[in-house]
Image (tube, rainbow, N blue to C red):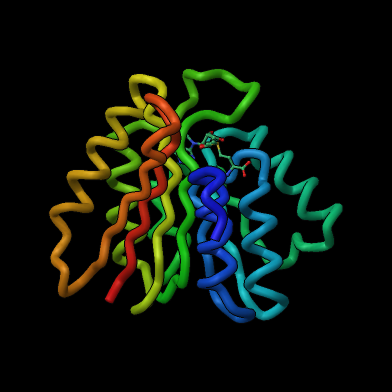
Length: 186
Ligand SMILES: C[S@@+](CC[C@H](N)C(=O)[O-])C[C@H]1O[C@@H](n2cnc3c(N)ncnc32)[C@H](O)[C@@H]1O
């Protein structure tokens, strides 16, 4: 286990959770790095459903997956993640959220608390028993702090008979350090 960053924790969770044949969701496709990591782990018999609201994210991710020979393992949706249930059926092993905005793009296109909460609720419904949701949260900006607060409250309120929720904070990394939240379905 690496304690380098919330994103490293997420990548290790992907590796420990997914096996070939699994179905996974990338709720925030961006440049496709997480989509690619998930495609490698679900293998030829698995599938990854990826979502973003920016056409540029789909274009970049499609090109990346094509270069890596992984395009056949993924469906790319130009759709808000809060609508993921329209494209994904139940039995998902892992859903990844890397919140915030695409580095180098408009900060106005950040994920937002209200739609993130809806998406996490949808993802919880779609999870298979034993499946996981991984969230990388960035409280160093105002909407990111709101998002982290709201997700923490949501996670604290989950029935322990149905879900286990864990929050990793980097205690000596200063204010605004990224936080990882994990939610496991019983
Ligand atoms: C930090 S980036 C994701 C980085 C990405 N996982 C990668 O590996 O490159 C966050 C992404 O969330 C997207 N986003 C914002 N609101 C969204 C929504 N409602 N549904 C899906 N994606 C959204 C943004 O367009 C942005 O590309």
